[in-house]
Length: 62
Image 1 (spheres, rainbow, N blue to C red):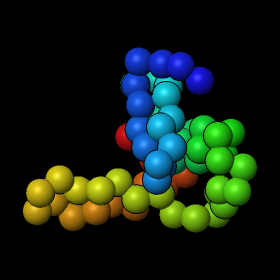
Image 2 (image 1 turned 180 degrees about the vertical axis):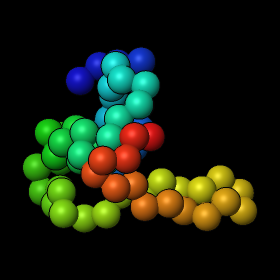
Image 3 (image 1 turned 90 degrees about the vertical axis):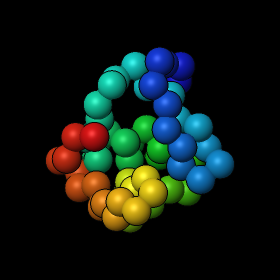
C-alpha cells in the first residue's frame, strides 16, 4: 500500500489514501501486512499528553 496518510501498528507502517478509516478498515489494512494480527483484538488510539487512550470500535471512524 502507498498513500498520503499513515499509521503504525507496532513496528509496521500502514499507508492509506483515506484520511479517515473505520476500525474495521484499519484492522483489514493491518491484517494485509501482518498476517498474524487477530482482528478480534481492540484497537487503541493513544492519547496525546494527558489525554486518555481511546478504544476504536469497528464502526467508528478516525
